[in-house]
Length: 134
Picture 1 (cartoon, rainbow, N blue to C red):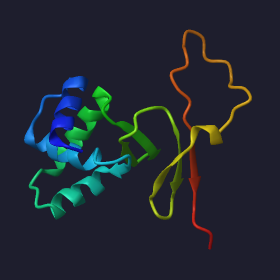
Picture 2 (picture 1 turned 60 degrees about the vertical axis):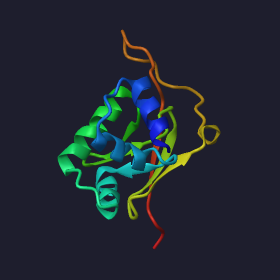
Picture 3 (picture 1 turned 30 degrees about the vertical axis):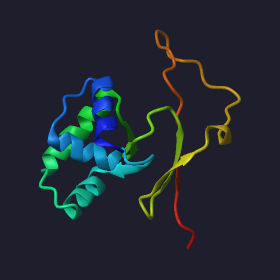
Picture 4 (picture 1 turned 90 degrees about the horizontal axis):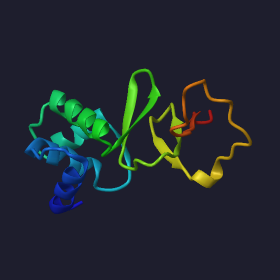
């Protein structure tokens, strides 16, 4: 994704431009993908970047809070950052650590439970955990 497009997205989502944020965004937003913070840090290191681990985590949290990316929690300690922010479903391979999108039309619900009193539905997203066959 071009720097001009990233600047435009930052403006759209109310994010202040910094060189470090641009570096993280250029990796995460280069295509539709799911990356963990560690994967982003690894790619930054390979490109010669000196952005600190703390800055990467803070940047990802900021991007998520502003809606530029979506957090996908696959377990209590593993989080991915998804460049596609619309509500959608995922497969998570617990053996390989890979997170894959599921086409919306592939998941159907006949009925959802009644919502707790005083709430409204925000989204429905399914995470299906799989593992490699032995």
